[in-house]
Every structure is written in structure tokens, then in C-alpha cells.
Image (cartoon, rainbow over all chains, first blue to last red; front, side, top):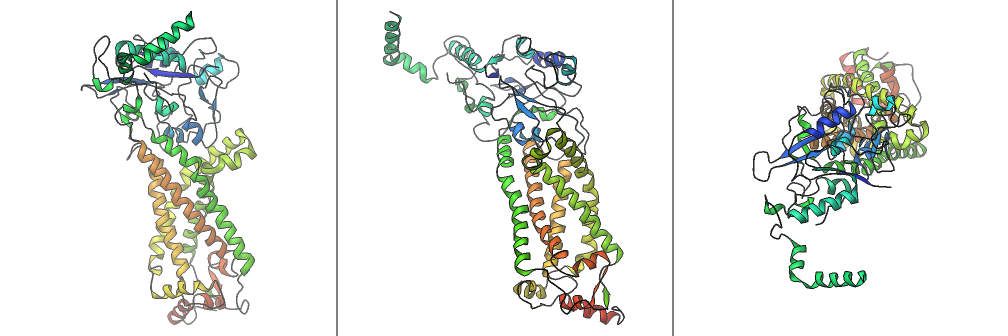
Length: 199
Length: 329
């Protein structure tokens, strides 16, 4: 099976936030939750870069390791998913996540966070049949089951955000960097996969 | 033919200096505009901030300011702590302390009232003192069990109960932890105010500790209302309880005073104090119940056997009798 990854080519990202909007629309993400976001480093200064970030579906995912109720699992595509029926909304996954991916529908105090929500790599969740209405309501779209990649990457206007098999997107990125002569790196790869793309 | 070409290409690659240079980089950009020469390498390690474990922060256009943290590699350190050391510390606090107490019980047995129970009793704790003690004690038990569940439930209870049942239990334990925290904090503050004057360490306590509190052997060092060990329990509860309250409030209202790294640290401190306190309280519960005859009466009925009081709190009994000759009846 493929090892699915995200890769944001920060030298191409124009901070249009279309990935954020596409994600919210494709998955009907509730108000206040952003499964994907664009962060701009060195805003307005030389060396400014924008990076689109969501769950990176880490190797040995920290969220899964710290979850007190063990509600996470990894799919055959190496996508990290969780079961909302088991989640108790303790917030530990947010402390552990290197990418700030876990989101909670409620922001009130006293532990009332609600069930955690995060990027599913557009591959739904553990809720009956793939692509069912129940699955959509709880976890969002299951594009992987339809043979499609996550919508954020699919509709990136500059093809900055890449999704797909890790080796394939790494080779695309490697080719880009060697052609144009620069590249600010595969953001988050060292942290998520303990590897970087050597060019 | 292709094999030959490939071999030729390899030879060229390894011998031609131009290629070798190219592989090393930084080289002149082949095409296009090079915005920053320092970023030629497509290697995340070179991204400023990621060399250490500092988080990469940026600018964000959505209201959730926590999202401005792009990468915080320290999340993995927190993960490793929870997966490894935390389990060992918890095991040492609960099983280690439990084993020590069991060994002590086997060796020393229940410490009986010397000469048996007499007819006379003396009032030891008033109803308000007992109320604040049990308020703290019951809420502490709920907090300790629900806290242990969050810390180690996954490796202990979860395999026994299965995912659904364990989640159903954990949700309620989580809510109890969050709300029972308030009676606990009230209890700790009350005990601090009411009992602090009896718990100032003095020279009598030094002797008490030198004689190991009479736990070993059959001698009984002098003691006032509270002996050295009880004073230690008092300060463990008050200081530990205040530490737990402060860090706990930080966890109840996440990200109000600190960021993601601070929250991780607060969580580790909260758990550390709690486990230390669990070990100490196991000792307290032991000696107050099965470990010593007559000790539980003080908190149960408020009155204790006069003989027991004279053995274990001689100075206090003398004080009480001096105040009112009819204190014991």
C-alpha cells in the first residue's frame, strides 16, 4: 500500500487559503474548526513563506500515543484516523500534536471541548459503509474510497500543496527544487516522518 | 546497450567536477529567481527554529491564535514522557508504596492500643474539623482515581473493559475530576487555615523523626496535637494540594495563561505532584485505618481512647487536661 503524505512547497504557496475553504466545504466542517490552515512565517519580511498545514498523519503519531482512551488508528494508507464515539474530549492530542491539528467544537472551559475533529485525509472514519451519510455527518468526505485525493491538494491553484504517495510527491518536489534551484524544504516532514527530502 | 549508457552516465557523474559541485549545493540557481540563498537546501533541518526544539510561529488570518504555531516538535517529547517515564512513576507511587505498606504490615502488624481500650475518651476533633477532613479526603479519592485513569487507564483498565465501556467510564471520570476539584480546593484551604497553628515544625518533631516516630520499636516520642509525621502529611497535603490547584486551574482553563509548551509542562507538573501525593496519602490512609488501632476514631467519632491519646499525643493530652480537667471522661 501507498504511504500517504502531504507536502507543502512553501515557495509556491501564495496564501490564498483556497485549501482551507475547500476543506471546510468538502467536509462540512463546523464553525470554529479549521482542519487545515495557512501560516505565514516572517510575514512582510525577506524570506517570507506561507505554509499550508493540517494533520500530517505522522509515523508513530503522538496524538495516538497519548490518547487516554486509545481512540486512534492508522489505515492501510498510513492515514491517522480516530473514532469520535470513543473520544472523551480531554485535549491531550492537541498538547502532543506537533502540528496543532486536533480541533474541538466547543471552546468552553471545564473540559467541555466536545469530540475532537481533525483532517481525515478525506478518508472518512469508522462509521459503517464508506461514503455513507452517517460517516459524512461525523467525519466528512471519503474521497479516498472514491479513488480521489484530498480536495485541499487537488484544487491548490499553484500546486503548492501535494498529496499522495510519499515517494511520488517527494520525487515531484525533488525535481522542482533541482529545476528551479531553490526550495525551503518539506515543512513538517522531519517532525512527522523523521526524514527530509534530500536534493 | 542501456546498461552501457547507464554505466557511462555514472562515470561522468562521479568524475565531472561540475556535477559533483551541483550535488553539494548551494550552486547558482539553474533557472528563475532565487529569493534567499540560505534556503537552497530542501532540508527542513535548516528551517530556523527547527534546529532546536523551539516551535515555529507565524501569522494567521483565522481567529484561533493557537493555529499560528506551525510546528512544535516538543509534542513528541511529551508523548515519550507519557508513554514511558509516567507509567514507571505511577507504578512506583501506587504499587511501590502499596508493597512497602504491605511489607510493613507483615513485619509490624497492626499497632494495638497498649494496655487495651479503656473507658475514658478525650475529644480530639470537632465536627467542623472532621467535615473539612472528609470533604478533602472524599474529593481527593475521586480525583486520584480519575486522574490515575487518565494517566494509566489505557494500559490497565482498557484491556479489561473494552473500548466502549472504558470510554463511557472515562467521560464521567473526566467530568468528576473537573468538578470535584473545587470541593478539594475548598477543603485544602480550610485545613490550612484551621490547622496551620498546630503544624509549625519545632524541636519536638526533630526528636520524633530521630526516633522514627516510634514506628520501629516500642518507644513513644513526645508529641503535641500533631506529631512530626502528621505535620509532614499536613504540609504534603497543603503544599501539594495548592500546587495541584494552581496547575489544575491552568488545565481547566487551557491556554489562558500559557501556550502549548507551557500547557505540556503544567500537565507534567500536575501529574508529578499528584503521583507523589498519592504515595504519601496511601501511607496516611494505612496508618489511619488498618495500621493502627484507635486512630480512625479521631476522624470517625471525634473522640479517642484516652490511653491511646496519652501514648501517641502526650503533650496534647496534658495541654487539654490543663485547660479543662474534665476534657477526658
